[in-house]
Image 1 (tube, rainbow, N blue to C red):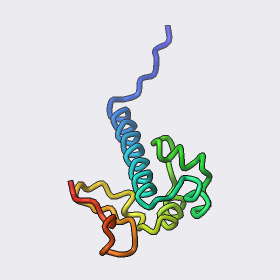
Image 2: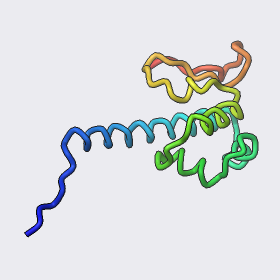
Image 3: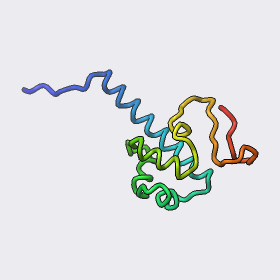
Image 4: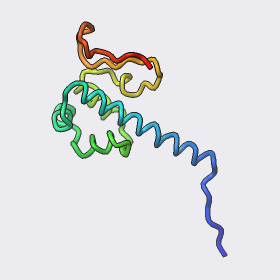
Amino acid sequence: MAKRARRPARAAKTANDLDAYLRRLGERVRTVRSRRGMSRKALARHSKVSERYLAQLEAGKGNCSIVLLRRIAGAMSVPVAELIDERPDRRWRTCCSPSCSIASRPAS
């Protein structure tokens, strides 16, 4: 009887960490997009990334390249770091004016 190949516990944990990170990245993209008042269609048009790919990214299913992430961030006028930064004290900046009432959310 052949033995089933098992994924080492460390590799499984790494894969789970990656999946969780991609879900959080997708949530941040969706949050910034909605705070900018952009539809997915508008973001797709401005970033030259398909709506389907954006939907997958926002659902945590897409593993986005840095080049595509730069285009998405640029289309929303935010730095890439705003999307990838996981520190709890980060600020969401959703417009160019610091005096704008939606410019940032309170730190957690």
